[in-house]
Image 1 (cartoon, rainbow, N blue to C red):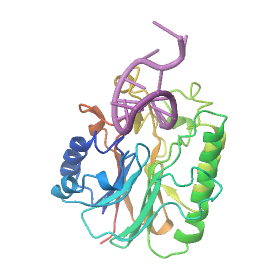
Image 2: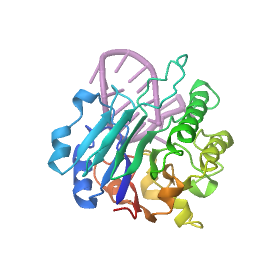
Image 3: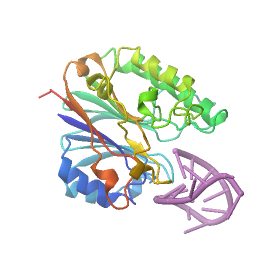
Length: 263
DNA sequence: ATGGTGGAGGGTCCA
């Protein structure tokens, strides 16, 4: 079973890129982020025409995530449970989870957090606390394998950044962000790509649109899969598919694909 | 001039 994560930066602007990629890569499941559209405007017909059903948690203009699958999607939960009612941003569409072929999957769009310091950075760190609590309390106690894919907006180490010094104070690389990310790993989750490529450097999933970043390979690795022990035991491969980033009118992210040995 | 680009939406905000 192959599961992909792809921050598309607007499903409307990226529809042709996404459908051609689905037809070519044919993942069983595709976890999308940054749809930037409301539920009612999601292009279900075009997605179905290439063989996928979609469960969507959308929002006008910003955020928005979806789970696409060639197989049945069951037990969908929209929104990160346990949101703080006092948090004005708690209703942002950044989390959706469901079960496909016995695997609990989630599409995650973690807050960017810039600028640092400030309320957006505080919100990012609080959101990571909420994500950790949900994983610990609801997902890990279950017996099914769990695969949490998405745009985490965290470069776990300096090996995941083209310019570590230049990004030292960026919310994607701040020690606080990395420490929160490690609290997720310390629950017993495996970061799939790093587990299979322990010594790799200079492998990225995001390149800024500006400054010729793609041509210079000035990238960041911020799109990840976190796997529960039951899923990590079934981990076969995890690869970054650079293809879509090099096309016309691309997203600024490119897909990451994990393969799990499940029936 | 200090996001140089791109997306949404029709102001700026967001990344």
